Length: 318
Image (cartoon, rainbow, N blue to C red; front, side, top):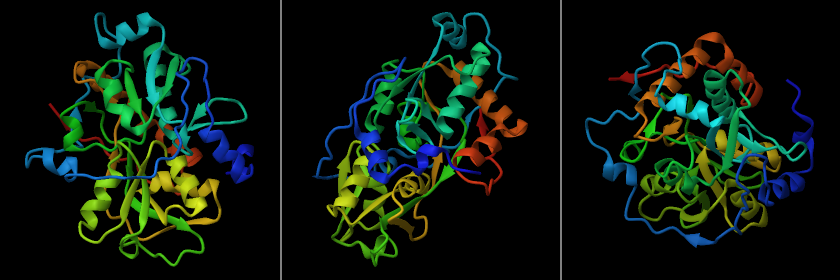
């Protein structure tokens, strides 16, 4: 598949496009804050503290049948409003990225949201995108600022205490991105060195859990493109997060490379308020259609790669 023309733009333009303030029609204007050189002090991984032996984070509510908008349902209220409000990323190429040539947010996550909109309205474009940071995802769902979040968001037991999730629609794992001239081969080579990740992601907790003593020094910033700038400037030795996100950063900067094995499992789900279980079931019905009608595979091939795996199987509860 030939990459889109804007992918072949100079790296500097891509980074500038990502960190500049944008106002997308029908979405909140988002300005990436300056990269913050913050050492992240943590008591311990939140997911470990909140998890229980009985928690299965990948199990979601079973659909009641094909996706249907019934009277009085959460979906009917969204339809009456006239558009779906989705919290998304605009800085993660492949998944949620603001195309600087046409001002549209696009990617694998965006395809998932548009499939939900199509099931409600018969039109995939009936979406108001709200570009948010990792740290905003849960608060925006809880406050009803958005109906749904599609934002490379890992499902875990700690987060399930705060929001509901769909079934898994993508499987990722955490790895490391370094400059191409770096001798680093894995996270274990980064002891006492600065490693960048975003505030509100699971990535920093995973770094600390992997090497609790003498390990990397985590540096927290709002957006992954902020991490890329720090790596390019030499202010951090590496970026560590999901390999799906790292692949997008590496595509923007050919003088970087992904190294080392996965050291975590990161199943992605669409986040929805716990007040709307009917919407969770509806979204799961939409995702099941995408798994079986070939649309999931087509989206994966377009955005992620031509070696298309089988989609993650649905796992249900209740």
